[in-house]
Image (cartoon, rainbow, N blue to C red; front, side, top):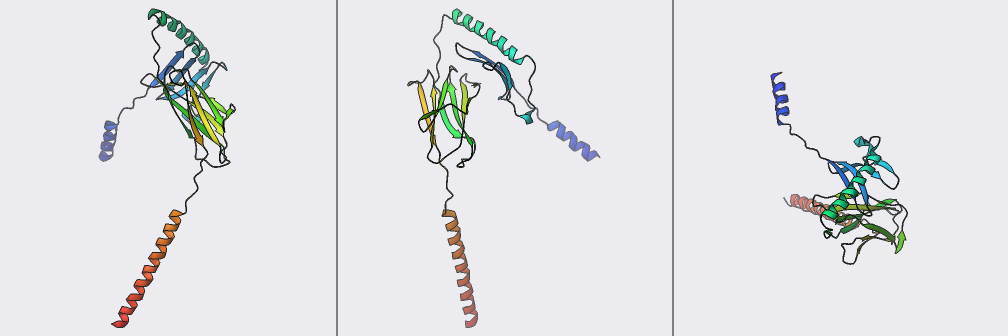
Length: 234
């Protein structure tokens, strides 16, 4: 009993504290409005000002939460944000806007299998201000269906990340592109391409294994032959 109690005491005494971080983000400009809550770097829910409703984004296993009046709280915070923005611009005599050009990358959510639906993700990072436009093409044709755009994610350096996703069914030879339009880019836009490239299993490993096994068996047979000859000589 003493040993058990001592072990439990050691476990309790060495238990480390875990620090979590809640976040609330309010952003506004002439074209953008955003209000969201997050936890440990993950979004919990946000206000959708187009559909005029609150959207819980945490998965079911994370026990998503919301509360009545969340959307209306977002509307109120945006109004305060716009008033403060106008006040700051006037007080600082319209300072020059700081610009940070974004970078972009395109990748598939899952391993690519021909004929099986998948999702392409265009990740846009390091942009400021957050106003950005993302578009998709398939074989040089503009795609608008099955396209979605995430909320902005603020980074510790003050810039923002955002990603756009496109549901698609890969077919051999298809080429997709993601174009990002932002005022900080010299050409005003950057384009990243992604083509359907399904890896075909190589025959190299199988051939090498087969050759190695054959040589091994040949060596065993040769060794057995010389062993028998040696015994006959004796």
